[in-house]
Image (cartoon, rainbow, N blue to C red; front, side):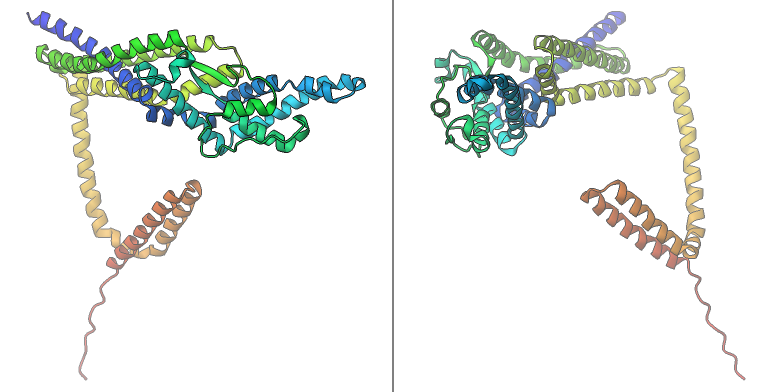
Length: 420
């Protein structure tokens, strides 16, 4: 019976460790991907990453260059005798447009645009997933990130810098606040004088089939997440109640928690690698890899915390056990603690009796030493917060050594007056 209880507690502990890690992943996923505000806050820093910015810039440049058909425009403007320069000029124009797009992508205005298009896309996705969509259904239930506002800002710069490229000055809206005009696509199309493809400057996040799968998954996820969290707590309680040795159970929980966290981390990395393998090698794969790294940053922190928690539980449970090594360690730690306490009391008495006199004798040197240390720290830690802390600590130090030095001054004896 005792052996059965021990085995049952061990099995429940192992299952509880894996469900605990799964619960953490599920809670992170619910908080990050199913909440628009949280998702926007997570995705907002993406354009600041060089790899993500390069991928967005390359995509926008290629889309714009294709629709402008720069080569054909140059053939129309140049005489037939100059046809041989069309190729080199087209290449230079592509590089120039790329530089212009890079400038816009790295600017503050695109940051507002990026936040706005992500918010719109996420709201559309959640409306479809929750079954409340009315507008997006007319577009085939596809959710896209629309970079047309980025193209709009690039065209504004190009029409100022190269007005001859379009034959006239284009009048396009200046999107400052991130608010995107509803008729922007029609206005850009009319001003360029070309028919824009239906998916121009857009990339699909979810298509119809994927959204249906996600919809079913989210319904199941919302229903099962609470059960998973409660089930984890129930498994832990049952394991501790059934176990004939709770210290051993806590030790097993710590070990299994490390194993579960490492296993789930490895699985997520494998899934990440499979996703990246589906993307062409180069700037796009680098951009997606950087985006995944940024989006899952909080999840990686939680995984690291679970590993350290497991190690802490295992080490503490082992050290409080009856084994020869833990007993030896505890005995020597107690001996060391008593020795340290004894040395501390002796040192305190020595400092209390001699410290003020020594401080008074070398007061100037101690003050100068404190200032030198403060200057060195200020050079190493140049932030305003660090400087404030250093200044406060220096002031307290200077006042403290001054008071100690005064306490060490010998008390003058009263003179003896002799009568003549």
